[in-house]
Length: 328
Image (cartoon, rainbow, N blue to C red; front, side, top):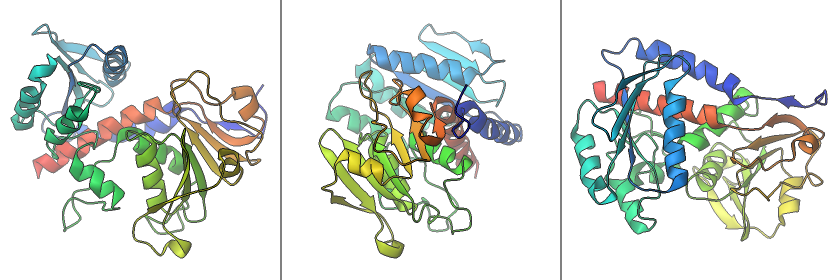
């Protein structure tokens, strides 16, 4: 039996509200949004992610729509009405395939399963995905806007920027469990909160730290090289976050934190329990759980063991946003 003071939050429960909203909005569109995923490598992790995206995008009542040509699989999510196409192409043909999808008016969003080349050429590929179809928010325009705390593409503030799916999903989980203070103004609702993010990858950890700091938190960002602090200064005097070197140890950062979020891609790594505050909020986004469940439940007030379902809901939400922008 779980300790009475620890509430375990399931990603499915958080995702369901977004699935309901997606279903309602998609039903009002003239045609369903189409998400195209490009797989152009033999990397087992990338293939597994592609297959997982296809399964989760299908939903419980999904049906296969098209299986031709042989390198294309197309499924429709009967829960939301969104269509997902997986296109397998040789990596030397990927640039042309992305360009073709950019120009195809039937395609609403594009994602690429990385690594493709495993070097700077992958950065180039991220930047040739059209800003109007970049469902993952990886192109330079979205990444720069995210770090600069610029939340809209246009001066009229009608087109919100796309945010990477896993960081956005974690933010939605924090909103769901009440870490965001709704009394405060939008963009300041984490004022007074201290968060540690154990992962500083360019895909999830660093963007997440920046987003949380831009929303008012003091964030300790941890990787194998040490701790860095992301913040907007005393009284949130800064418009966007700044980053500075930090001489705290990981244990000291954990001890100061109201929220601990971990995503270390290792079966061995576990967040140490001893330094954590009593009543901490603990969130894991690694496929290898970074918390020892029996231990974290004795210390945490809220524990979120996985975020995958919310990530997929955010992927579909980003797609709907792009589709809506395209129809204007």
